[in-house]
Length: 395
Ligand SMILES: [Zn+2]
Image (cartoon, rainbow, N blue to C red; front, side, top):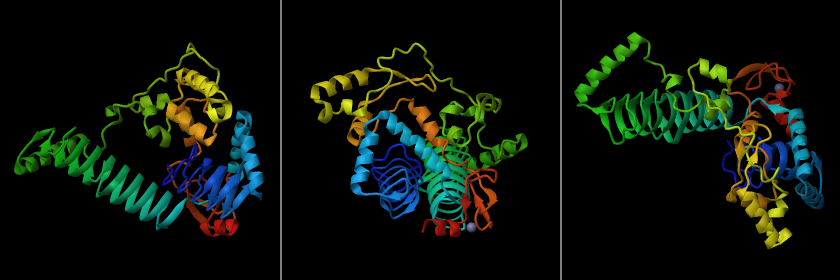
């Protein structure tokens, strides 16, 4: 959900950002921390709704020296770092919002759309044209009701979940380089498949059995007639066919359900591994400097690293056990970012909670009162502005 970024951490919906931490909805920024809705900014801490600024703290001009000093102070203590995260929450809640996040999007309705046109009820996409109800796409055209379409180009796909380089593919899951395929799962490099699973380099196959072109056409017509009579035709695979628990899938990010709601719809549910008896070798990781040989010397750093990598921590929120891995530790040392104390899945959930729903609502601009279409429901308390009012506000 962050595109073309490098060395970012705990960020959400950022584009072309580098060395940014705990930022959301920021674009073309460098070395910004705990900030929201920044464009072309550098070296900012705890800022929002700024364009083209450098060395800003709490939305006020600062100096390079003050910036470095404040950053060093935050990096010196896990408590101060956490407090800065709390400040970010406050800044975020008080920021004004544009009606949507669009870059070169013409005649589009949804959110987080770039270089697209005529995309309605679409979210998180790049290079789309004439799409309806498509979530997460890159290079897709003339398609509807799909999730994760493109990477590379897809066209004329519908009711499909994860399609790559495919054309005219419908009611399918995870297909790549397929054409004219229906009700398929995990198929690739094929065409004219119906109800197939795991087929590679196939053609004219029904339920994984190959036929002549003529047989295929006659039989698929019969199968479709039968499916119409049972009401199955035109429906995606039932939720009960999904081999993954609902709460282990991306669906939970977009459309969260409780266990009882998911089970009542026929989905599976995974009980998280909770362990009250997980042996904690440490209550929480030490301050990040304790693992940095440049700061505490090689011997002490190595001893702390060995202890950390062998440790199993228990998430204070979910009680699930988790570990810190070597590459993760190296990233944190290099960027002087405190180590996480909660389970990665819970971190992901908390980040996802900051996003708006994949839904469009009609409400009024909070300044000029013109009607706008936005992913902020009318009853939400944020101040949401139409494009013209938002531009006036930030420039
Ligand atoms: Zn307005």
